[in-house]
Length: 255
Image (cartoon, rainbow, N blue to C red; front, top):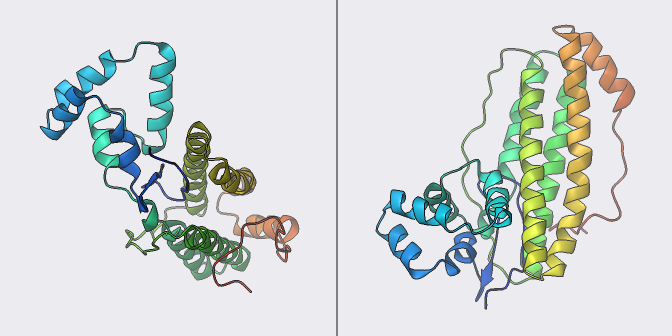
């Protein structure tokens, strides 16, 4: 019996993780419950038949809503394409690299514009994202899982306006929030309460992140190209120096 024991998501390429004999394969949980005719249609590459059988198999509105909920973090509506995408992912590839890289590009952009408050803000964000990655690494180590570091695509480093990097950061945080909520739901459905508990801290963290970045974006949009107004807001509302959260999961390498 498949047991969902580890549920992590901090990047759009991962939304579910199932452990089977120590192999964390995201697609395994999805494919394990496919009836044979559906599995055969998928293996044959018959997307039209697979999609027709999937949509025809929704016996109730609740089943259809549940599938839509599971598919939402991937941004894919076609059942066949969704299963193809899910099949690629493994939990051990997660290290939060995408968010770290994105924050570094954003801080470099603002530093070049001589906006030290915004540059410092995103520098702190990059360090925070690295901390999140190390929390996940520690969780994998604690549960005896293999930890690997994947490559990631380079994020955008050219922006048309001062507000654009902030808008991109908000979009990413919102997607991460949806993924984390989906994973917590998956853990609960599987009766894996330890994984669900692990995700609770990140749920709380994402509420704070979305609120902070969203507020900054509204200020930046009102300010337009008035960089001084944005810098003053950050100096006043986010001076830095916040203490560590004592309820945070342990990070790998921490003393």
